[in-house]
Structures are given as structure tokens and as C-alpha cells.
Image (cartoon, rainbow, N blue to C red; front, side):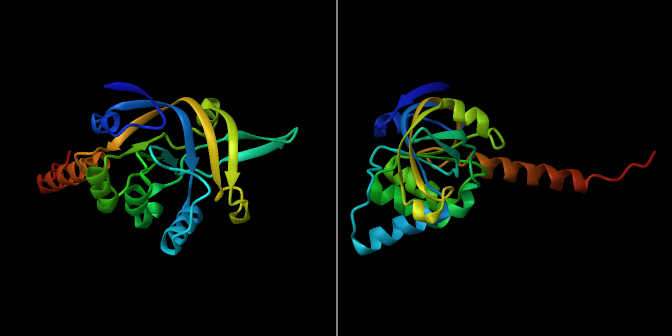
Length: 200
């Protein structure tokens, strides 16, 4: 199935998504990589208020390539970062901040999947190496936070229109598409290795 969704995302809209569905997202997304996730966790531990509201929102694992022109930031490329680096933090971010969608590449693990089930969220993937394509859907930079972390690690608040295609890789039932593909590939490999070698 193909869906066109808008932020803030409603739990019901997210819970109807299933592994393999394609989503095009319009609204506001927030980039966050390793350093931003660590700082978010520090804020949560200290009980401090974040400078942005992620309720119903989408986090994008991305370190955009940006340029400042006439006093405004422009995103030149915005491809995804490998998501497994955020696995340590993402479950708690979903739980405590009300995130409904995580976007990245390469898949995420059990803790993130469990949080998606419990709190009504999904993990979606965007094609790696397609940073310029991603930038075409980014209409403007609304804000940026924590630039002291560096441009790639800062939290960029982006307005997007039909951002995608995003493929649902973990849904709110707990299915994990990438883990399923890896397991099936491993099974097929084992079967092939058991077959007798036939030489010409």
C-alpha cells in the first residue's frame, strides 16, 4: 500500500502502516544523528525542556549538506545516515518524546521495534546515496538547533513535501523487514551449502 501522511502524525495513521508499505511524508521533520541523540538523552536525564517538540513527529537520521545564502540555510543534499548507531537511544526517544516515525537506512533492532509496538511508531527507510533526491523534497529550513555539535550533527528542522519514497521496515506489530530478509537469506545460503557440489 502507498500512503501520503502529514505531520504531526496521528497514532491511528501510523498503526495502520505495515512492513513494505510506501509512505510520502509532508510537514516537519527533525534531523538527528549520534551526537544529537546523546544530547537529547542528557536533557531527558536532567529533566530539561528540549528546544523542539517531537510529539507526533518524525526523526530523520541525516547529516545534511547545507549552504547559507542571503541569510537563509539551503539543503543541497540530505541522504540518510546508517540507523543502527542510534539503536541505543531510539526506543527511549520514541517512548518519552512521542515520536511516531523514524527515518534512516540499514535497519534498527529489537529495542526500537519494541518501542514501535508499545507506543505506536514505525521505522522507515530512505534510499542511501540519494541525497540530492531527498533535498528536492525539502522546501525550506525552518530552524536549526545545537550547531555547536557541528553542521551534520545539529538538529535541523525541515519542511518537506512528499518526502519519500519511505519504505516501512519496522511496523507497530513488531515486524522487522530487514531482519526478515537477513534471516531468509541466511536460510537459503544454508540450504545451498548443503547441496552436493556438481563439477562440470
